[in-house]
Length: 114
Length: 111
Image 1 (tube, chains in turn green, purple):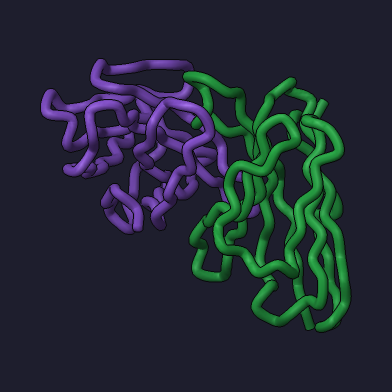
Image 2 (image 1 turned 45 degrees about the vertical axis):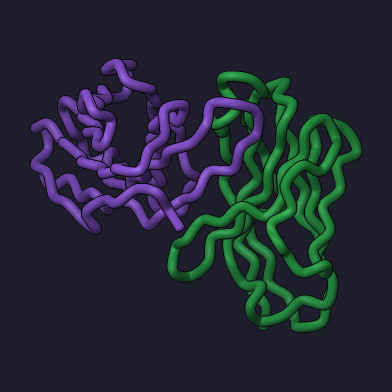
């Protein structure tokens, strides 16, 4: 049973399209995250949700809209895709309290914008 | 900016210990040291963390200097599957504080 699963694994699309990436965790964690890893391999946090509430929003363009229907799911919707959005997007989750920085990551979703 | 500095790359022979250093000279009193690794084309994987005492688990050992300004991750018997990028990060253990990731150390374990 995959702890943090995200779909799709690969996504190839044209500029200007809208796309979504879904994420689900079965660890019972209260916090979920979206990270972006660019071609230079920097891993940067985009959003963090705790019990469906947004707690971190790292100056991401408002074309990116996360949605958390419940604490086990955090989806990422991207409008009007641009070339610079091409990257690998990782979903992660963690408990609250002392283990808050012990993250479990998904396998990643590679987005290619043509 | 990341609060840690690590060598860009290291090599290790299979079966030998891999010792990965990390400098975090500006670490504050309530910040822990976390280690993660990322095997090619996979998501990052948590390894170990510690505050000031040395820590050991089934994956690795973490040695933190007494002044807490540096640490070493030790993989006691490296295997080819340990080839990965290893990230050293510092952060509060409190709720949901964001971690700032550097570029890590690319460890190559050679047969």
